[in-house]
Image (tube, rainbow, N blue to C red; front, side):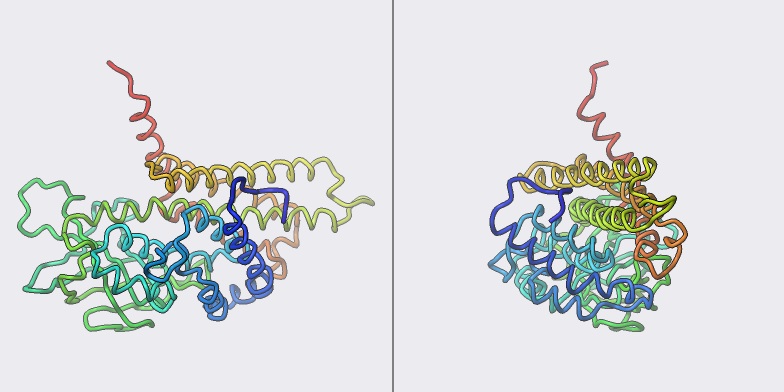
Length: 401
């Protein structure tokens, strides 16, 4: 265990879980991650291993077959997984957000129908808010759900679904504004639908098409897709929570815990970049001595380690605040913003320490260099995080005029 990014106050069970996950990462993920990433290959064996460890049910209550652990435990596990390969943490995260939304907002029937199989990893989740050209303006979605008897008919195109092909349950945000009074706020006319589908690409159920994987700069292995709904019929009992008009709040609740997850991913990738940088600096010699003995490199290592430590502390604080039942949108936004920015900087410094070899696909840092930018835009861009942070600070520090 490294000196950096330690977490005080963990229980024996939490420490045991984290030690198990770290051992799995060291033995099963790190040795194959770069090869699989270069081939853009889905990590089937790794995912099966995570199922056996119970990671897909980590936060699902014990009554539904999960481990019933805290957000902090989950975030620390994600940090370890991302240290091995960030794409694997993405496979787990989207599943976790859907399970969390079901746990918090689902009807009893919906919980009983999905959570046990999600805990076992047999049903895997994805969630969908974004659309082509939409960006961060969730309130501007155009996908619609229209009531037709005991079903809803969904039409529209969704974008950036992590796990879009491999998932079998997708939480989809659509507009359901029929019959609402004129002038109803747009965010009050949104509903989350639970869409069951077959894994794979093409027409995965009548009216639902997953066109194929989007080719990306990094974040490979995990499938990121579009989703096209054309007359897709969904039973009314698959409206999350059983009531329309609550979708925006449900999704934002899921994204809030998802931002803690993205912060944890940034921490994990930054930790790995530091490990690679500090190791290479002691192996590489210039001017007759290891480059680690040059002051310029020591300064870089000092800055990198400080950023790893700071990001980890903020992530842990955000997770613990959510676990305590308090509102944590401010802390989650700060943690996500800081961890993603610091991750990018630590990875770039590790890349610089590697010199020309950092540009070679033979070295792991090349993969991390392409993965880090995704964290700057995932679960809300850095600019959106700063808007959220700024607004919340003005609420907290409002002055009387």
